[in-house]
Amino acid sequence: MSERRPLTLHQLRAMHAAGEKIAMLTCYDATFARVADDAGVDVLLVGDSLGMVLQGHADTLPVTLEHMAYHVGCVARGRRRAWVIGDLPFASYHASVAQAVDSAAVLMRHGAQMVKLEGGGWTAPAVRALCERGMPVCAHLGLTPQSVHALGGWRVQGRDDAGAQRLVREARELAEAGAAMLVLELTPAALAAQVAQALPIPVIGIGAGARIGGQVLVLHDALGLAGARAPRFVRNFMADGGGIADALERYVNAVKSGAFPDESLHAFE
Image (cartoon, rainbow, N blue to C red):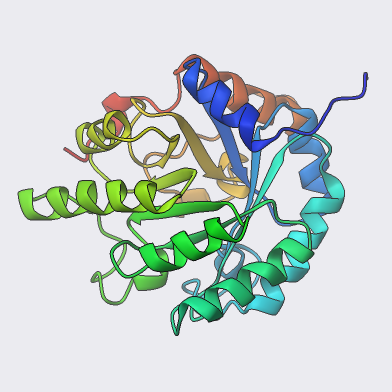
């Protein structure tokens, strides 16, 4: 296989401007990072979902910055082309802008090329400070797992007019603060499309319909390992046979072509 140059933020922006969908996958280790990278995944997100997927917790709250740094380093050593994003875990950026800067620096020293943080409104100053210091940021709105208890559980966000207006407003504020990418989780497809049209940056969805700039799935969900617990927007890409590499190639192709997700199964309107 010919040597491939690592993707840059400039190239991801160019892909978005050209209308090419971005295929993102949540990954936690070097081996799967290499397989996903070879399959053509554009972005590897080292998510704090590892607390549930790898550690067996009920939510992401027990994950620490040290956990995230370890797994960011693993993924960064396994990739060749894909852009690497590291999640800032619960309580690692909540206290102050200075704390956010310090925590982001830890993940970037371990190989993250961008950090992701959850929430809008109060996070905008931290996003601005990180970007001013050369630390690219991916924002995260909609269902924000670190706030699962405040949100009343794993519920679709932005169903009512007030919630939808707040989400659009916060998305604009985060983009204006410098966020270079936005993940939207569990939002109605029409609202997600509205946000994507309002922003100059890629909007990546998970349970947010197909009319946006790309998709992200947890690797284990894409491989059918969630079983009956899989959210309804998830597709098992192993179901058509072949190995893991084949399944991940099918995922990338489905995202790029717009075949995934199937909005007839989205049903969050």
